[in-house]
Image (cartoon, rainbow, N blue to C red):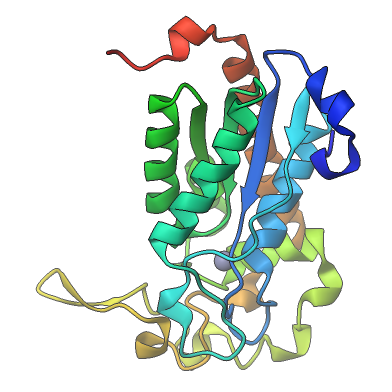
Length: 251
Ligand SMILES: [Zn+2]
């Protein structure tokens, strides 16, 4: 079920164990191959797939996230961590006021994770049982097996996913320039004696991608997306099955 296509009367009739899914993305540069909306596209895709199974409520995505580390690239939009946290809390409170107490943030972007974790913590203190599903952390073994090369941002992983979700948005003709041959294998950040000393993408990637999009593969994209959706689906089943007593944090 998609919230924005429902009426308030239909929402009022939702069962108490309904799980709401809030995709959270980013609008930020993803190198020359992928569009700015990549993270929102992946989070929305997972939310849509899983909301189609059973009593799950798909909320409209929060498409702008915390993207300060990409601000030097045109088109990047960013909110502060406090703004994202507060927006996520407000959405959760709005649902909770009408008895929808189970909420999953389906997150597509690393820098959103900490503010969403804080939002979820505060909401649980208000008896709205919110949790964050960071999709790339859900399938670590599969990611490591299919993508052994360093890949942090706008590289093979996200490009593979986008070849499935929105293939026309992938600029195949820009892959060669963004490939590892041009130095795009740099890890995220720059380190001196183990201490991170560079934080913005522009400091260690001229084109913005950190990872090699030319290694993308549609079939691998299908595998990681379907495995991530399976995990999210099983988590929603678990959350729906928990009583409020079981979900309430200890006093
Ligand atoms: Zn991304």
